[in-house]
Each structure stands twice: as structure tokens, then as C-alpha cells.
Length: 524
Image: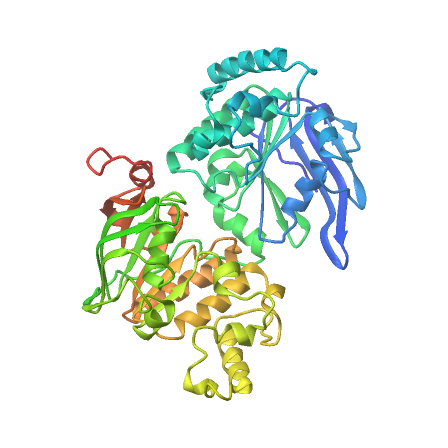
């Protein structure tokens, strides 16, 4: 495999001594599954190097080997030109490697200063370590735009600030190679832009950044070079400036992929969903929805944008019958009871509401059950499946086989348990179950979360096709690209309130990001 050749501003004029990291022939198997197969990669010092690939391509396994979580079955690791054994994460840290995980490893009720020092104390007395860390935080804040109050309690910080604390932890441990795993998954666009400024600053000071992400737009924006993995193997390493999202997608999947959503303008019909003054208070007494007003018509997709945790989940749960609330919800002009026994998912389904939940494994499937059983859940009283006294399992299997064929579920085996399908194929099973019921209203949460890029294309096509059949779709997604591409209208949720509504053709991600951060519509 050839190492990347970078642009003149970031290419050291050196041989191997210009490499921060080199992996040679790395292989790792888990039983019969070959997670990594003879992987070689070179990363230049002082660059931002992206690693992309579909789910299960082996990215996380490779980085776990580098950070000492796994031991490779074969292969060699070179740090700064020197062969290095990395049996555990302490050795990785001592070798100058830091890692910022997708799910942060912070103690919520500790201060920033305490989290930074934790595990790297200079001795039994904490005061010198805390003083040293405080000075370092001040220096780094000035150098890299990472202003964080050292005395702030972590649980009181925004997600973006918590991520900075993770980076500061790594820098405090003198990391020269910084690995970031899906770093923008929970950030607003403004927070992501600030993170990228930080990463560029670190690069320009000689640090080496390895960025694992599935977002091709971010790869194109921030990286100097990018390596592509497919099915446990390294397929290519290229200069970012000399490639395109389309080429990278093809390298990831092995075929051409349509990255944009191909759809005609919507032709909305009658109002299907009316929501007025919807309020939800959770079991801890916290108000999660604060007077939501929404209208959704047949033949259109209304996208709900927002950073996770701002009320999107509660909105789907109430509309889907999984939670109670106050206010008014009408489906085709008829009121839905939000309290008591009538407020349940079965009633919603009878009223023409289908629901693809945000977490397919916890809410959409029973993982130990067969695909044919999962395909009938919620609709098991359908006459085609028999009666309450005698379920026709053969009819369920036959129905499942047809849905699997139409939704390209792989492998198309109704007897396979749900846990044995990939994430993308699990999602297709849920989509097939709900969409083929021809609902008047489809509630769909995070439709492509953790889904391969090839499956994303298919799922988007199915959503648009349902809209074009005159159905109303309420789409919740934390992916702004997805919201912008699929939606006919966009409403932005922040802290349980609608901050504004926009047409995709009349807004951009910058404006939506301001609304997602709580700016008023006028200010945005």
C-alpha cells in the first residue's frame, strides 16, 4: 500500500523519520471473523489523516489495536520510525498516543481540572498535579482556542466543551498522535466548526490527528489524506485534495453510490397531523416538550432538526403512543387521547400511524427472535396471520420473505434471528414492517443511524417513495445533511421548543446550527 502524498504546506521533506505512525501487516480475527486482514498504513507527522469505511469494515478494531485494547494476531507498529509493542492503553499513552472516544470517558461530578489530572497524578499529593494542570489548561486555552473553566463541573458543561476536556486530557499526557472516533456525532454545526479549528491548530503545531468518521463532507473539509477500509482490508490511501466524496463512497462500498437525495418537489395535500401546545413532563418532573405546535400534510416530509436530547425523542414517543402528554393531537381532524388506556401504540397503529423508533435494537426489534416474528410485531392481529387462537406461522414467514426481497434485506432468510443481521439490515426489517402497512403518517427516528452508506441510499429512496404515494412523514435526525436532503420543511427543536421553521431551499446549515444552539429565529 502506498502512503499518502500531502500538499506542500504539510509534507515533511523527510523519509521514514517524517512518519508519525506506520502499521505493517496488521491482522486480527475474532473466531471465524477476520476483522483486520494484513493492513498497512503510513501517517505523516503533522497531518490530519482520515479513516473511513462501512460498519464492520474494521476501523474500530484497528484503532483499538493501536491504543492497546486488543493485541494483533500479526503485524508490527512503528511510532516515529521505532517498532513499538503496545500491550495496553498505558503503553499507548506513554508512546504519545491519545484517544478521544465517541462516548466520553469523564467523571461527571468531577471538575475539569480533576478529570484532566485523573490517572496522571505526579504523586500522592494532588496539589502539585492540579497546579501543573491549571497552568497547562491556561496555556492551551490561549494556543488552541480551548477555553474551558478549570473549576467547572463536567456534568454542567455542554457536549462540545466536554469534548474539549477529553482533548485536553490527551494533551496533558503529552500525546503527539491524537485519535478521534466520530467526534462530531453529538455536536452542533458551530461546535463542529470550532473543533475543526482546534484540530487545525494542533496539526499546525506538529501534532498528528487520526480522524475516524463516516461523514464524507467532514473528510473533505478537514483531512490532508484519507484511508479507506472495506471488509477488514485497506483498499486505498489518497490525498484528500485529489479525490471526491463520490470516489470515496465507491471505494467504501465497491460500487457507485448516489450521495444526494433524488426527489421531485413535494405536492402536499390535506393536513394529516395537527399538534397544538404539546407538553411532556418526564418522571423526574423535567419538562421535555414546552408547548409544541406542528402541522404536517399528506405528501410531504417534515424534518425535525436538533442536537440529541432536546425533545425529539419525547415528541416521537408521544406521537407513537409510548408516552403521555398534555395538549392536542389530531390525525385527519380526529382527536387522539393523550391520557389513559387509549394513549398507546396499538391505538396509534389503528389510526394509521406507523413508527420506526430511534433505537431499532431496544425499541424496534426483539434481537433473539426470528426475522419473521419481528416482521409481525405490532401487527400480529392482522387477519392474514391467522387469529388470536391460532397464529399462522407459515403465513408470517411467507410475508417476511416478500418484504425482505422488496427491501433488499441480506441475507433474505426469515428464520435468521434479528441479532445476526447487520445494523443496516436490521433497520430495513423495521422499515419494511412499518412502510408496507401503507400508513397515513410515518414517524421515523434516526433512519440511518449506524447504517452503511449503501443502505443509506436505499433507505432514503424508500422514504421519498412513501411521500410520493401521498403519505405524511415526520423525520427526526441529528444528521443535518439528511435533514436538508430529505425534508420539504424543517423545524428546529431546542430545549423542548420549536425555535423556527425553514424551507431547505431558503436556509443553510449555518442558520440551522444557530437555531439548534438556541438562537431565536430573528437572530439566526
